[in-house]
Length: 614
Image (cartoon, rainbow, N blue to C red; front, side, top):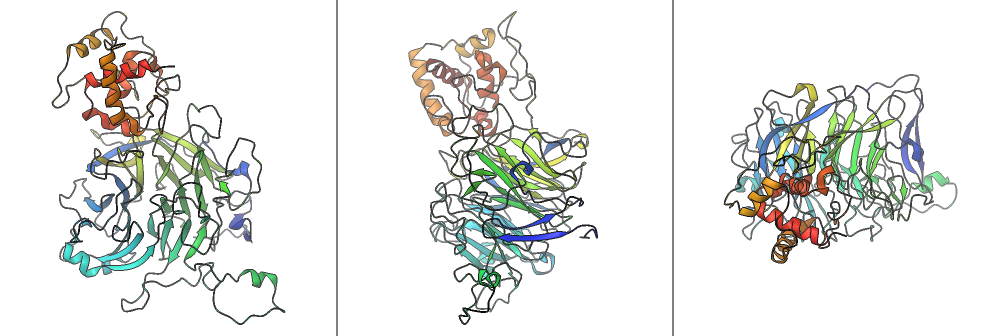
């Protein structure tokens, strides 16, 4: 990458702010935010009039957690499944029948992968930069034998069978690179990726629970709550499986040395950190589940999952020497932590994010937002096509929104590019530079295991004007939905709650269309309203399926309230509107109901919700 001769790069490091590369205003290169007002939030506008669509490539993936490309000329896309398998999607979009990697059958006692909670499992896959020559690839997963500790393991493909790793090949080539102790079952981070410098970067969460009770974010003696960087290019007979890159910010900070009290500057003393982990590249992150490098510039973007109120995107320019402190748990994005209100005052600790977006409730006591919010950020990849230049795309797990973060030459812009029906879990760049995304229908608060949820899919993000003919495109929420009053002037017309298109009420497998359903379809009025037996039956179905995201009283656990005006769909004040939301699904996990809840059961759920309306 060329540096402009008129540009001055300044590396600033302090105990409070950490390290950041700042660029003067004359540069077209992005600037690390210095103040809270420099942080981009929803409502921005990216250069290039960006319009995108998500085109389905393949489906049938159970709780997918990562997308990776070997960049070996084959055009293959590798989709990681939480249970411990990796599937191959060929260049033509066909899916290989047999998994490329299956870690559920290598241990005679059962799977090697811990999946006891929705945040545990096989996290990610990374291919060595010289994969075409050496066949090395690396995975990061929660180890069942090690009680959920994260293990990073190298394997080597058999050139005679490059599409399938046999159990014998898996065990015969396994080389454990690192084990990260995990005190709790959440906030494990998980992404691994080789940077443009050839080193392996590892995203490690703060170890779990909530609020960082271990204070791992600011503790440089632990690998938790860090971005790590290691050199895996060691000989197999070495006593250690990796080396510390000599340019790591703390590479020599804990070297043993003679004590010298005088004649040493304070700057030199400040470099001594006898308990630091030299693997640390940056610190003060909460749960960096996904991150990406811009293939054009080498800049790094990190999607750091937030806690209760804000999601953040961290930016590290290629020129950085590492050592950034991103503030957790003293900060939550550009906001104070813990947060008590919109006007909290606290010292700014760490390097500010480049972009952030709020939860539905952006601070304690706030009124729920009507749009532009989410609950869990999932990094997808960096786009350099379709009018986008270095735009980091992220998807939200709860809201289905896709945001793009980009630099307009003067400041950061965060634009909502799509509001889909998808529950995003991860993404990655393909060999051609395209950004891919995967979705699940997984239930966070009542995890049913990695194989019990309906399968998700692999999606390719394309310019809106480049959708192939006949391709399946992800549904998106329209800004205006029909206000037609159902039940007036004949039978109501049922419409999809996302795009307002008519929907056909097809019979589901093994479903009996009852007289009550027929009556409802004719009149738009729920015949089960006030029926005590139906209400009790509806509550049972509700607690079985809806209770994953909503509480017994109809309020939101993860999703919106179901008993008041916070519904985001305009027609939910009517029986038809409520039926449409449950039947067709609004966003995220609700899409799974289509094959699990009958129309008669939906009417009973509605009767139950009506009975508890406030």
